[in-house]
Structures are given as C-alpha cells and as structure tokens.
Amino acid sequence: MTDHKGKLSPLLKQATGITAAKGEGAYIIDPEGRRYLDFTSGIGVTSTGHCHPKVVAAAQKQVATMIHAQATTVMNPRLPELAEKLGELTPDPLNAFFFSNSGTEVAEGAVRLVRQATGRPNVIVFHGGFHGRTMGSLSMTTSSVALRAGVSPMMGGVVVAPFPHAFYYGWSLDEATDFCLRELDRIFVTYSAPKETAAMLIEPVQGEGGYVPANARFLKGLRERCDKHGIMLVFDEVQAGFGRSGKFWAHEHFGVTPDAIMIAKGLASGFPISALAASEETMSKGWPGSQGGTYGGNAVAAAAAIATIDVIREEGLVENADRMGKRLWDNLHALKKDYPEMADVRGKGLMVGVEMRRGDCPDGERAGKILKECENRGLLMLRCGPYQEIVRWLPPLIVTQNQIDEATGIFEEALKATA
Picture 1: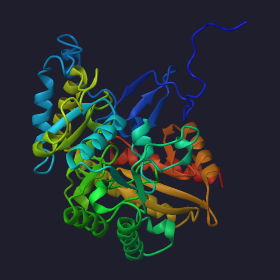
Picture 2: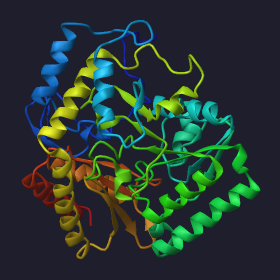
Picture 3: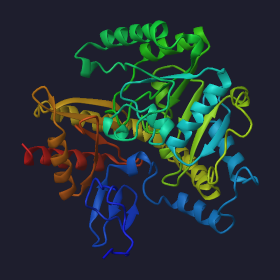
Picture 4: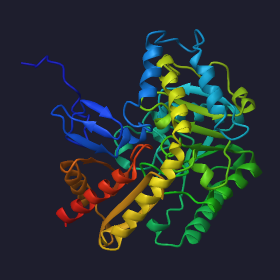
C-alpha cells in the first residue's frame, strides 16, 4: 500500500548531514545546539552572515507592510529604491535593472535580451561555466555532465569556447590564453559567424566549474572582439560578485567593463532575488513583455537587498573579504607545502578552491572524505568541479581572522585523518 505521508523528493540530496535549526553570523546551529562554522554561506548567498540584525529588521518591517506587490501589476516602492542603490555600484553605463528570483532566471533573461537587442541567434559560452539549471541556462552550462544528463536535447544557438584554465591544460597562463583566443577566432570562421553571434557570456571567476579565475588579457581579448563585431559581452557575477572576490565585482580585477551583468546569490543575504544590469539603451532594445515573472523583485526580498547593500558598505565587507581572502590564501599555501595532494589553490578573495589530486588524477573521493571529517569537527564546506575534486572555501563576508585560522586548522586535521 502506498505511503501517503508527504516526503521530500529522493532526488534532493544534502551535502552534509546537518539540520540547521538556527543561523547566527558565521555559524549554523543544529537542533541539539551544536555550532558549525559555515563556510558554505548557502552556496555564497548569506553574504552578511546568517540573520544579520539590519537585514532581519528590514525584512520584518516590509512583511508587516506589503509582502507581494507583483511587479508588472503594481509598483513596489522597494524596487526603484533598490535599482537606485545598485546603480551606484554598477559600472557606467549599466543603469537599468530587471529583477527576478534566481541566477538561472537572470541567465534566461540575459539570453532573451541579447538575442532581441542584436537580432542575432547565437551565444558563445566557455567550457566549465555554470549559468543555471533551467533549460536555456542549462544549455549554456558545461561545468558537469551530471547537470545535463537525461534532459537533452539542449537549446540551440549555444557555442562552447575554451576557458584559459592553465592548471588543467598544464600550460603557462600566457600559453592557455593564446590558445583560447585562437580557438575563439576559429569559432568565428567555422561555427558562428560574428554577424550571427549575439553575445559572449562568461564568469569572470568560474564557480561550479572549479573556482578558476579568468585573466585580464583574456577578458580584454573578448572585449576587443565584441567591440569589433558588435557582440555583447555579458558577465555572470552570480557567485563571484557582490564583494565575494575582494572587489565589489569580480570583473574589477581584470579592468574590463561588460555590456550586462548577471547578479544574484549575495544580493539579499538569503532572500531570493536576482538582477540583470544593462544600460537603459540596451534594455530598450528588448521586446515589450519579454521581462516579467510572478514573484520577480518581491518586496520583502528587495527590502533585504537594500539592507544588505547598506551593511556591506557600512561594515566595509568588501575590504574585509579582501583582507580575509589574503589570510585564507596564505594559510592554504602554507599547508600546500606539506600536503602535495593539494595540487592547486586558486580563486579570488573569499572564493577559493583547493584541487585535490592523487598523482595526476582528480580525487573527488578524497575531497568528499575531507569534507565529512571537517563536518565532524564543526566546519561545513562544499565541493565543486567536474569530478567533485575541488574543496571550495566560501565563508560569509563577515568572517574574522580567528574563524579563518580555525577553519584552516580543521582542514589540516581532516587532511591528516584522510591520508
């Protein structure tokens, strides 16, 4: 007889065995009161930590006033206020914003916009990129075959170009960059003519693909080609943006300005809201009715986002991410000298990946064992990469030096325990 008691889908898998009864700053607390240092940040979402008092107060005030003011029906006053604040942070001339709920919806919105604005069908993405799980965004995602398996065929018009992952290729950064730019030029004469290419869409620092930063020469090469051929350059800053990299936007590390930015995750400290930023002129080239959604730009989430921006500014959290990122970098590189299985340490700011290898082979099994040992010692982290071989460091932007040192100490204990 069928059990009619409601259950979660068996396809929903947890990375840890923890039930989070409460969140407090950089900590998750389980029902028994045990505290865990949370270096997952809800996959980079809780930028100001769990339940920051100013974010909580803003959300509570908004809940008591208006919960849902559907954005294409009535104007929610929080949205223009949020747009104004974001406009102070985005590079010129990106001053117009479409608000949605998640990174994947913003990716879908970006594809619609670039195709309509240019009248061209194709989008070039880069190997190892992650842009979401809905069908359009999934068609642009190549970080892991597991995400795409069983749901083909994918959306057409997507062309995948190589990303300058020098460690993977076993080349110098210059060699990897030269190769990738040559291959991009080859795509223009073999696969997608420039006049049929609407946009290049790229993460300045790859997330799920393995925490691999791009580099200035490569991104400048993309900008030059986009300018030459009238192609739009879109930066996916969903995970790397909003202070995570030690600068407000990850692309600031490379001196290249895009035509559009995808924003989500750290925008509202845990409330579901995302944004696509572009110039008003570019937005105006989209077709009427092409941007919308029932819940997009929810009033409570928008209020939380406004408060999040205020906290990041008032508490100097971008600067803290830079300082604590350097501390994390130094600690991990010191460990790398004694643990050769830490084959590579890479990233920017508080977005750092440690690639585990056994000889020349990616070692996802070891990475998984390390995370379980860390969990047993009170530290929560995640994995990424095509073989789940990357231990990723993703603490909230409020993290302290003592917490960085405690976490790297636990990580070393886990290394020893899994040797």
